Image (cartoon, rainbow, N blue to C red; front, top):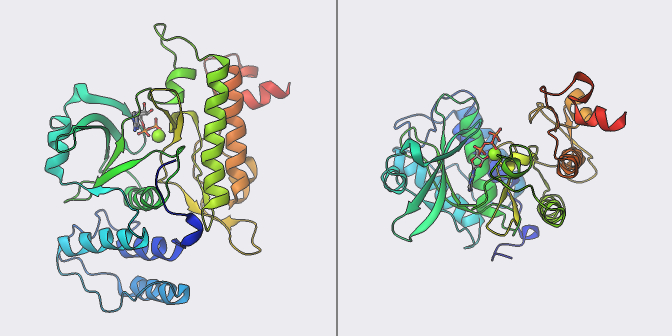
Length: 326
Ligand SMILES: Nc1ncnc2c1ncn2[C@@H]1O[C@H](COP(=O)(O)OP(=O)(O)OP(=O)(O)O)[C@@H](O)[C@H]1O
Ligand SMILES: [Mg+2]
């Protein structure tokens, strides 16, 4: 297990809300830390401060004013560092560092593409570390919120079955995440998109992946405080190292779970069709159980080698869950 903080020691909810409020991503097309003289929305700042005081864990934002890009950027980096109590391992990279790591995002270095943007293999020259560099598509919807949530969660939570965030870059309008490179790509590549040159996963490896992914989820649900609901548990988000140890990736959709007596949080329905729990999809009520449903779907994919939704199959077989019940 990587050195990390005991999640029970901190409560990061007010930080996330305050910082997300601060960047006001739904309304702005650009991270305010880079929108040089952008004024912080006073109403949202007031709300942030209220949450901040209520939580009684943080100093106030009240006397913070940001005059420059770098000031805001430093503030966010400092807040993350403070909260991590010295355990934050992610670094702030310059855009130049990452251009150098990926040979200017050279197309042959691209290893994948998802909803967030393109992923490149790279090498951080100063440490000679091989990394995966995910560049946010600047036209992407909700990108800033996802970027920040991912940085916060992966900077603060550390477990052998969660991907390691090496660092990030929020320079100008760039939003880039830098991860430890996972030699065997995603579970999807080995299970559902198997090329003829690739050996299918043996049974033992499949069970090792399922067990490790479950441990990652258990950590988010049982040890993080408040619990973190992953919301995007699917085969393409389970990355595999050189020994096929799984690590969960993509925390941009993650939500803080219910606290106290509450059983769920109400939120917009997000996730991937097929993996999303039906009761969450129909009511918007999200709980850790929604992730457990998605785990069940992936587990069925693991044991059958079939994709949950596969339109190339006969109609009665297109939905794996319905087909299994027949
Ligand atoms: N840390 C990493 N190491 C190695 N390969 C990676 C890493 N992160 C991502 N990849 C590769 O890049 C691909 C695209 O990843 P990405 O998370 O952007 O999209 P996705 O999970 O396929 O789709 P979605 O955006 O819907 O989650 C992955 O399937 C994987 O093959
Ligand atoms: Mg992914």
